[in-house]
Image (cartoon, rainbow, N blue to C red; front, side, top):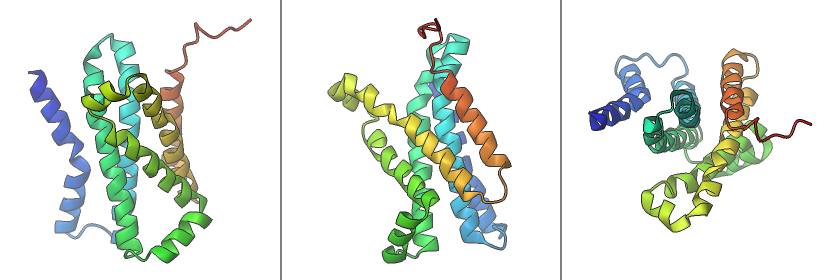
Length: 192
């Protein structure tokens, strides 16, 4: 039964692909299809980063270790969608013309921080296997704490990108703050 549940989560995690394929087939990408594709995968990257971060709080709330079994898959989907987001930006928007792209990465803070978040996701994806957990031992956990920085960078990327509409990015920020607060052990804090 548990394997069926994991398979169901896997196929549900492909939902962003289903949406874009449907919109491509039925010509529903809107007046700016390139922006639609880039933004779609950017938002879903952030959703999967937050879903990955939510597994530990869900474990604490429900006292069930089942949630942790989905963390790796969700994290890899976050990397997958971040890579599609980045490749869409580089390929569809810049047509792999790297000179103006590098110029934008260095001059525009939202692009710089988004690119930095993607770069930080690479070592997490590479070291996500059980074999890497055994090889890295305690260092694996230290390395994978980069997800906190990545999530902050992702939300900042979205906030800085949204020049006029702040509602969606602020929702992501509030969810991130709540998820990060779950990591604080208030009992260990000395409040004297």
